Image 1 (cartoon, rainbow, N blue to C red):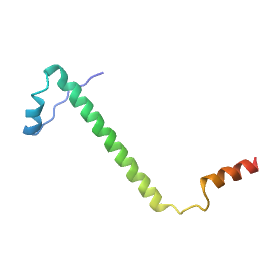
Image 2 (image 1 turned 180 degrees about the vertical axis):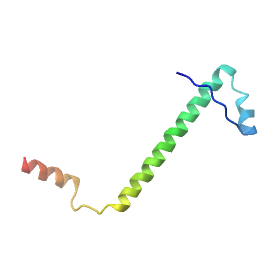
Image 3 (image 1 turned 90 degrees about the vertical axis):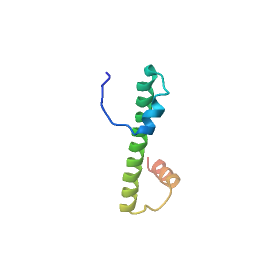
Image 4 (image 1 turned 90 degrees about the horizontal axis):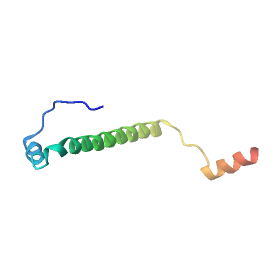
Length: 74
């Protein structure tokens, strides 16, 4: 489902957008906004992971050692 939206563009963005054929503008804007939203979510997630990492205490050992230990106990 598509949605019609209203937003304001800077003059230089509007001028550049005029070079795109009318049938392609929505596709271009949709693709660009989608990419920016993905980058925003990734950045937000990375910041949350950094915050968690700062709050957690390190665990002794390596993942290889943990796997070996788990295998030995089962």
